[in-house]
Length: 103
Image (tube, rainbow, N blue to C red):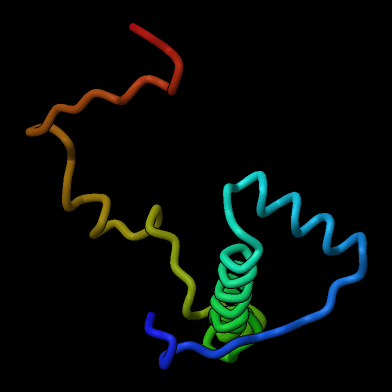
């Protein structure tokens, strides 16, 4: 970044906050300036993520609350056309072992 493209931000920290910030920057091999910039960018990125309370994310809860009428439900075990469609006689398969079990 050239100096014409940058802006400066200043803040105040109490002694404990400053010491924690300084120690963190040292642990990560960063200057205070680098650590401050990374912290601000990370904070902005987190705040700009999608709001979980947005209607787009809560619509499923609404659908669950407004359950379908009983007449719309089905049980495939009672649908004879689905059961009769495949009888299994012309295909073979092997069930997988449970994770962690060996043959």
